[in-house]
Image 1 (cartoon, helix red, strand yellow):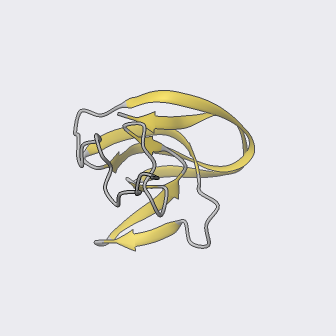
Image 2: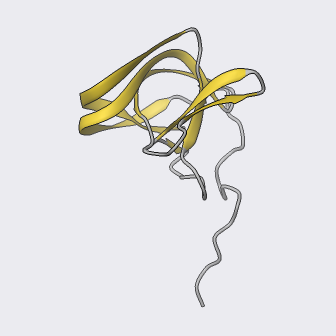
Image 3: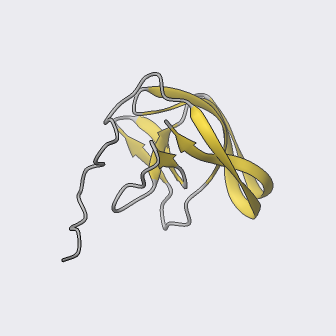
Length: 106
């Protein structure tokens, strides 16, 4: 019998203020964003992230600008969307980025 997918991340903490970037991957010609002091689930991160290819990757949540990025949280992908980073004051869109991007935060 197949294992049923869960709506929560089994084995991954819901928040982790001490989480940090611990894995990168290479991309070529992708829409990316370079962030400084963005946050995800209480963790502050800075780096380059690949923006998810969705209809609306940018959203306002609780009065703050977020962006959906292709990145894992403690090695896991959310069931329905990619990770949403809450942007700080410093970020830069990079239309056709080739190089290393953040792949996992834990």
